[in-house]
Length: 160
Image (cartoon, rainbow, N blue to C red):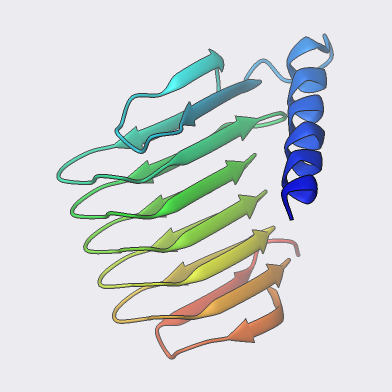
C-alpha cells in the first residue's frame, strides 16, 4: 500500500510541476495546500485556494488549478473533512464531519449533518446534505458508476 501512495504522490507532483512550469498554461495555474487542516495554506501561483472560516477545524485541503480556478472551502462547524479539488470545487459546511471529497472538473458539497461520506467526482455536481451518512459515490459526468446513496445525496450532469 505504501508503494502505491508514493507512486500516486510522485505522479501528482510531476503533473503539478509540469503544469506550473509550462508557459502555455492558463494564467490561473496554481497550488494551495492546507496539510494540517488549520486554515493556514501554502500557496504557489494563483487560481487555487483553500479556505476555512467560522468554527471549521481539522479539514486538510488541496486545490490544484491547471486550466481554470480551483478551490476548497470549509465553513460553519465542519470538521474532520478531507477536501481535494483539481480544476473544480470541493466544500464542507454546516455540521459536516468526516467526509472525503475528491473533485476533478466539477463541484462536490457536503452540507447539513453529512457524516462519513466519500465522493470521487469527475465532471459532476455532487451534493451530500441533510443527514446523509456513510455513502460512497463515484460519479463521472453526472453518471453514478459506483453508488451507495441515501435520499439526501444528488448527482447531476455537468458534461452535456
